[in-house]
Image 1 (cartoon, rainbow, N blue to C red):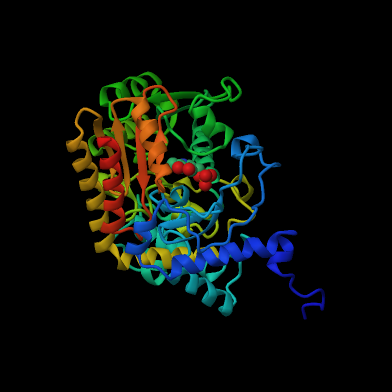
Image 2: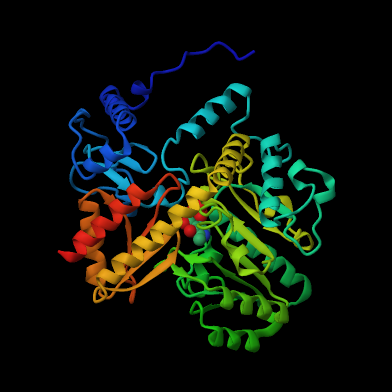
Length: 472
Ligand SMILES: Cc1ncc(COP(=O)(O)O)c(C=O)c1O
């Protein structure tokens, strides 16, 4: 049925003249990671791993400059990884304290997910399909998201029609979208469509100062980019957790406000935690102004045992956005979960061609089940990260102003920008991969977001590294 054609090419041939050597290096790195215990790996973090052959790796000379293009020096990109460790082309072993780029929920090549992937492929689960004919895994994932957003709901676990409509609840899902940027823009378009239906004056959207809701031009306008281009809307940003400052724009713009959007832990602004009391008041203000409340859980949704940070606030948003780690990094898959009366967009208003992926949905279901089954250990890891950060802060009260974030999403706010930059640089030099927010005025935070594989040993390695460097 599949026409005869050329047989599969070797991976080496596809990578060009040095393909064989490159693949051998990747394979040796895989073998190294798989044949060592976590303790052994931690003892070698930052070292060059001589068991891996030295190879001339491919350069990035045609990459965009902002993505490392045309940088002098030997390339040192990723070779392979396992759990919360990865090895670079220059054969250095890293402890990844950031879960890839905050999207590898279970780190790299988790054996359970790798086996699930092979099994799904064997069963014939499709890589992708048209959004008009979603496969069983995509449909099941939509029910699972509704179940997670409406705990205790009857029927939904069996995909039973009795649970399909939750008056006032989050019972509708748009899943045919790929990236978080498309999910955020979808939520904004829903706000816009609803506003347009009721009013003809320019809409106002409120977000938090330092927000990041993806790369759509509307979302970028919300953070002050492209000033004046999106002229038909007004953008207001607020300082997080300042209730008084929030009252003013709600009073000033009232029903012109189409919605408020925020993420629970601001991973583009020093991991600032948005507080429960603040969000409860925002919910009231949105209700008074008939504005929609959208919570961007792209960072937080699948990074805690209870799923979806907003649930701790004791309020129901109108729209919940998730993505990033939902499919554990296999393939971008995101979703907006919202209240049924907001089901107002047409199919091509918000869609991604590759967003209806049965295989990615299968991995998402696996990843969610793993979080459910491992909730206790994940909760304990979250507490250990917080405790570690506070211990470091208490040891260096002159250097560290505060601990930011919550659980796995954790920041150390340093008193001085230079200390934050230096701490970040030296951590990376030692093979401890963290991130820094110290490039905008007032920012001086070093951040981590461990993959859910990380336990006490990895967390203590990070804590010990912080302590040694801050003490030095
Ligand atoms: C809070 C938040 N919203 C939206 C996005 C955009 O997601 P994506 O990069 O998948 O488009 C990100 C990505 O980092 C994010 O962290």
